[in-house]
Image 1: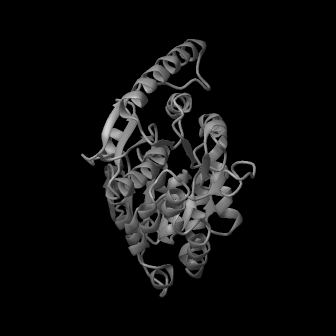
Image 2: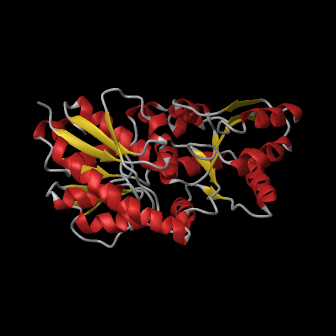
Length: 363
């Protein structure tokens, strides 16, 4: 009988995608994976592996909510702890690993009560409230950025688990070897698009005539509107609602314009692509801004903030990158060295409950 492991992730692609990548490795190594999520969570769209068993909790956030929603969130926390205790007792996982977000807290509490080892992974440079709590109960806490938590023996700098296909992307030295008359720009605002990008960027890039080709991930609500904007501006473009093959889009691109979620930055650096980062204004604790600053400090990306001067600043930097294409190579090469090379192996090799065979084949 296969040993079972609880993977807990919901809410955003930044939580779900690294969890998905770890789940695949565990399943391929003959473990059973039970995914704890929510019925309306993005994981139900992103995860299409029938080998994963799903369990759902009635969970909702508390931080930044109204009094009513805080009371509702507290009630749901208590209810989801009870649900988690039942799941732990029935399934008997050998450990659980949570990837951030409020849903991880009740499962961590239940696992801790039932003496099931708890592990946590924090994607962002500023730890979320959930992982501040989970860190108290965890045997190991894995962090993507090097100084997210205070140093101690259980904090491990792992980076984000990224799928193997990203290793096959064209290397920066080849991608940016020769000057190009037309540069490819990939634009996306995370797993569900970005309304601000959809409204502003088509007009920005229209100033450059035929110097750029565009692939723009708009999300499902705005695709037709964004497509019309590009067509009206006579810009060569391909507007997508979503992509399950991001590595192919990264490979195509010369420049990426994106938000600054942790998973996006990890993929940009792994792919070795020049990037203009636009941190989401309303990200909790401004974590996207601090994520982006980590890259900017190493000259691995350019930050353009979402404000009244956004369009002029974006155009200034696009003009700079087009005119000085050596800078594309510099940014991309600096990014390649920012995160650990094999994050999945670092995580799996530091979970002693996994058998030695998995630890030897994960790297």
